[in-house]
Amino acid sequence: MANIQHYIFIDESGDPGKPFETDPDGNKIPTGASLFYILTAICLDSVKLFAVENEIMEIRQKYGFRSEIKSTIIPLTMYKDMLGIVNKLQIPIYYRLVDKRTYKGKFATAGHAKLHNIFDDYNLSKLVLFATNKQNLTGVEVVIDRADRRMYNGDYFKSFDEYLFGRVNTKTIERIKHITHVNSEYVNAMQLSDLASGAIKDYFTGKNKDLRKVIDKKYLYKIW
Image (cartoon, rainbow, N blue to C red; front, side, top):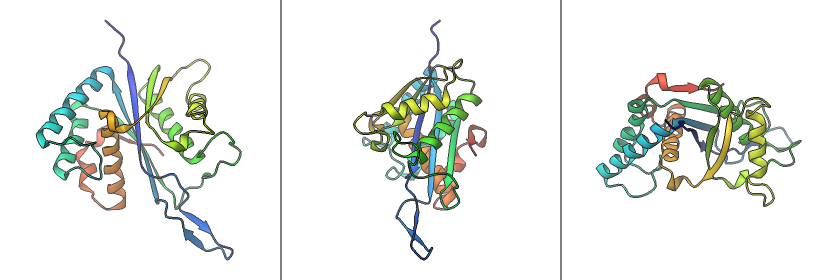
């Protein structure tokens, strides 16, 4: 029997920008960046990945939906059907929600010359480390939504990947085997991660508290 491959699909809701600047008088000036940043990791093995693809295709056909599945555009009933896949296939979801108004870490790249956004890089690596530890996973392929901010001076994603490998792997434990940066438009499992991120964001911002409730609590794990 062939070995089962494990994957972690990561997407985010919000942006990693600093939400406020301070004027000379010490007053906070909004920058327009989001107040919340949510990173969501969906853990799948190769069997569940195949099942997710089938489930999503069936829901697409049910609603006659041909565009990319995004939390901001799909009908509410379709959104709930999509989130129901998590319960049906018993998919563990780990998420890190950062309220940037109270965040004490760094937003800038000071001291990290080869990282474009230390806030994003640090929180993403923390999420992957926690998820792989809790699921007791090694040799994982991490699949991340492609973002220009994770490129550095034309090296594409090399510096980011080195940082993530270094934060999650040890000399004796190879938790991450591969890192792949993809356009979520072409990866159904990534779109499911986007929907989970959107549901979590809408719950905590009060926009819609019903979506997150579709997912059984036993499959949701918050990273502090």
